[in-house]
Length: 310
Ligand code: BDR
Ligand code: CA
Image (cartoon, rainbow, N blue to C red; front, side):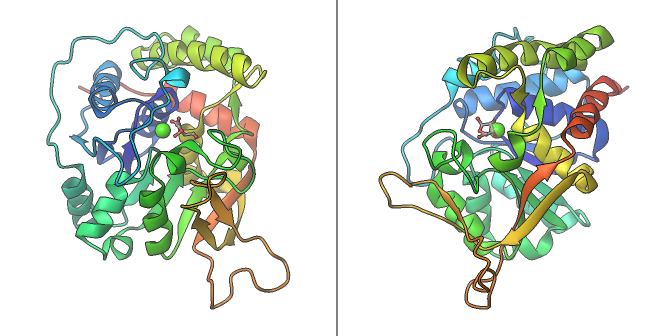
C-alpha cells in the first residue's frame, strides 16, 4: 500500500492503521487540511512517534487550478488538533511525491494506492504517466459523496479542495473504489474507542487517543454526535477488509462549474438501465455501507497492535 495524504487528524489514524496492518511502501503528502509544510511535518512526526521507518515524499503545495483552501477549523492550526509534536529526527526522502508514486507503481507488484487528501498529486502523476492506472493493483480514495457534502451542501472536502484534479482522476481511472461520506459517516469512533487507545499506553495508541480527543470534541460541536467519522481510516480498512463494506459500481463525474455544485461527485444511480451503459460505463465502486462496529474494532485493534520497529 502507498498512502497519499494530508494529515489531518483522520489521516493520522489512517496512517497508524496502515503502519500496523498493511505492507506500507511509502507515504506522500499533499496540501489539504493544512498547508504542505504542516501535512509533511505531521507525516514525519507520526512515523517517528510510531517508531516506523517508511519513505515519506513531499508533494503538491497547491491545487491544480483552484485557490488554496484548508480545513484548519476542523483539524486545528497544525492539522493534528492540540497534539504537541516532537522535534523531527529526519527529513523527507524527496520533494517529488509524483515521481515516487510512479516509481512504486512500476516496481511494486500489485501496489494499492490509497489517496485520502485532495487529488493533486494523483492528477499530476496521471499527467506525467497516463499508464498509471494499468500499473496499479488497486486504487481507493476517500472522497466524494452520493448524498450530501460536508464543505458545501453538495461537495466533500477532498474533491472540493481540488475539483479539477478529482475530475481527472475520475475521468482517467477505468475503475476506483470510492470511500465517500455515504459510508464514512456511518463508521464513528467515540469516547469508548479513545479510552481503549489510551489504556493501551503505546506511543501510537496514545497519539491516536489525543487525536480522538480532538475529533470527538469537533464532532459533538459540529454534528451533535458522540462519535467522530475517521474518514481516512475507513478508506484504509476498506482495502484491508473489503468484506466489511458494501457498495455498488456506478458512473461518477465531478461537477466543476455550478455555483452550488462545484466539487460535487455526481453518482449516476438510475435504475432504468442507463446507469453504467457503454455510453457512460461505471468507473467507481461506490461504498454505501459497512459493518461499522467491526470496522471500528479493527481500526482500534490495529493502532493498539502497532509494534515499534527495531
Ligand atoms: C476528508 O477531508 C479531510 O478533512 C479529511 O482528512 C478527509 O480526508 C473528509 O471529507
Ligand atoms: Ca485527509
